[in-house]
Image 1 (cartoon, rainbow, N blue to C red):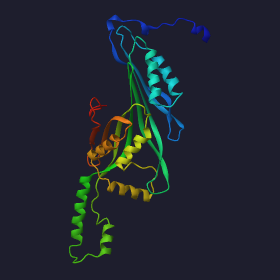
Image 2 (cartoon, rainbow, N blue to C red; image 1 turned 90 degrees about the vertical axis):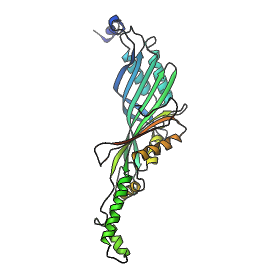
Image 3 (cartoon, helix red, strand yellow; image 1 turned 90 degrees about the horizontal axis):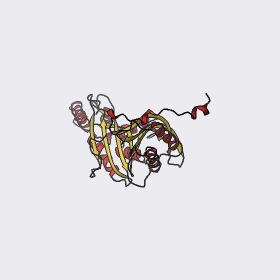
Length: 316
């Protein structure tokens, strides 16, 4: 049978058949982990095509309908995401098409798009640079005619424990007092040599790789500020993980850690202050997770903008 003859045949559509014994409305129906390229606008005006995983859903508001039209969701995704960069306006049009293609079935639509944002970062001290990959998730939801968009990013950074630093300094002081107990006066060169020795610096504070998970809800009229949010977080924390590292870069990183001792509570408050000052961000939720080297569990702090009806501490 030819392809043309096949298209003229009446194909069965059991999704439209009611099942009275299983009638009921469903909150969300759709597809997850759809493999699809998307276009991301860059700061220099160009676009970057990246591989993404997409979730697409509508509700099933008609209790007697057996299912939705998943192929329609997929075809709308393919048409929209391959044609224009991700913006709130583009996602609004996409969700409107979801609902128009499910008239009398659905009045809510949702899409979530996950990808990695690649950014080239300079080294701290040397002339080198390297690539950093930041997990990003963009989401949009339409309920009737009401639309909302949000952005999630993850940033890895280093955190050095203030308590451990204080305890280490105490041990170094005690070792100094012991090693120089018999000296009436202290020779400067001897102290410098002692400070540069393993015998002198008997303790070091513990630090660990940490993760900042940030969700922001955009104010109306703004595009997704992916790199700007990443930069806001890294500038607030001051110790993002590095790419290309020579000895001078490692030393600069050690200095940044020593000058930015922080508990997870400090990290969350730093991010809270930075995001609260950005007019593009209507609401936010931040989670600072310090993957402790001292013990096998994480130290975690969560902060929100604190607006009525906004994100709360237990939001996903």
